[in-house]
Amino acid sequence: MEELIWVAGHRGMVGSAITRLLESQGRKVITVDRSVLDLRRQPEVEFWLRANQPTAIIFAAAKVGGILANSTYPADFIYDNLTIQTNIIHGAHKAGVDRLVFLGSSCIYPKLAPQPISETALMTGPLEPTNQWYAIAKIAGIMSCQAYRQQHGRRYISVMPCNLYGPNDNFDLETSHVIPALMRKFHRAKREGASEVVVWGTGTPLREFLHVDDLARGVVFCLDNYDEYEHINCGAGFDVTIREIAETIAGVASFKGALTFDTTKPDGTPRKIMDSSRIRALGWKPEISLEEGLKSAYGWYLENVAQAPR
Ligand code: GDP
Image 1 (spheres, rainbow, N blue to C red):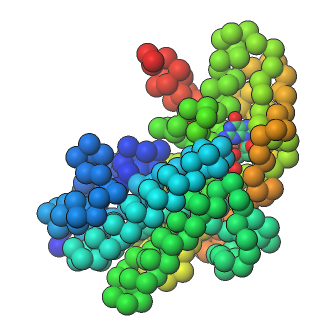
Image 2 (image 1 turned 180 degrees about the horizontal axis):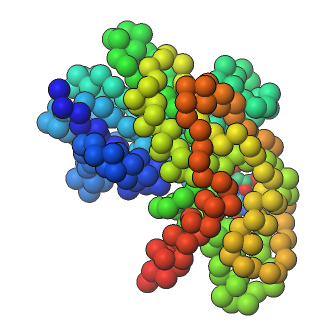
């Protein structure tokens, strides 16, 4: 059977990176626009899957957002994610699609999990409250893949990325993650000649950041080489404080002013570096350094967002 990979969520940062990579490898990809197929509508998803018959699905469709968006819109985060993944996973099985790669997030792990966090830490303690709605949906997604594997022999797997950044990220200050938010804030401060930029929280939390192109290689690597019941971590292998990432982005954006910390904003989990030794032992490793990745992501932002008409 000729390979046909459906990248669900191809317009997002992760889905677009995976689509770019697969196409550069000459592989056949199918996508469908949101205006044509609403992934929250079960009969429509099932119909589309039967009509198009992909041989594999990469699940990069999700309602995602930063710390504030997650705690402000808990209903949207739990409803959209549970519905979309249930429709696609069940629909895939019904349509006879035997291969699926589900994507989650390091926020599935307990808030105070031992660091670095190995795959076995799942469900060993309470979640970080700011993103627990999203995390619970993602945990249900991992278990759905396991359930269809156990009951129906489907080769559905789950990959857990750390915090990601890169082209096609969300640069909206209210809903974005920290890297795109700071790129935008530093750019604006420089343009307006402002002397300081506000960073949320205390600056002390640690985060593990991976360029989305490295993640895309990890996901496609798993599509081709990983077929286990257990989910697998895919992270950079080191973490930095929010203060450090802010200072690095300030350097990339040539902002020379001061950083101030708004401690009325949440810090979230203190640390969530993953143990990615399993995927590394299989043969994947990151190739883009943080400095290099931030420079190219900032360049993308300048060309595609900062200068775009609003
Ligand atoms: P998280 O990993 O789920 O907490 O996702 P975020 O990327 O939204 O936040 C990571 C950390 O960066 C948190 O400690 C935030 O408080 C901090 N942070 C600092 N400034 C900002 C900002 O402007 N936007 C966001 N989203 N986070 C920020």
